[in-house]
Image (cartoon, rainbow, N blue to C red; front, side):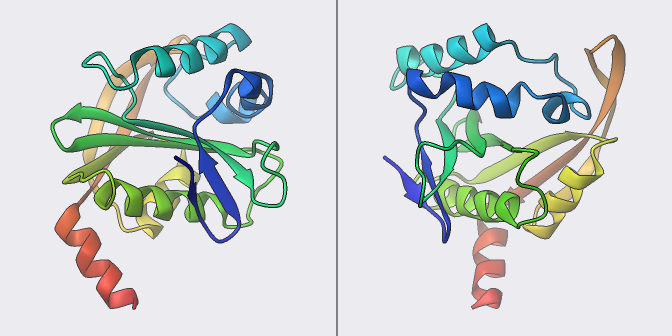
Length: 184
């Protein structure tokens, strides 16, 4: 079930995407300002395997997991995005865009389409995101797409040998619909 933006197609990953996806999410830029441990190639293969193993079951971790590819070259993975169910009709949002595609507006394009998808087709009521305080670029992106800063969770995750504080962002369905109407 692919979804599209102006320039991209967001589709479920396949086992054949593992290497290209690892080049994006396993690269140092993808984790250096994130409260996560770096992904190995095996981690990426297992993430794809678990997604399909549990899809449609009560153990499903990701409500939706997509790789992003240019419409002109659907085999070239330039990012990933996910909506992970955290409670009924509530999901956390995550996005990564390849370091080779900076400042082209692709992150915003993916993020806006994921919000549209989440509040539309997926029927979500609330979408939230946690971003390491150090990750200013991701915080700017979340604010640009209308997510609101709700607070800071101080030293809430231990990863990469240190404690990280995270900025907590969220957007509610009604807020999204009001902002979308204003943009029209």
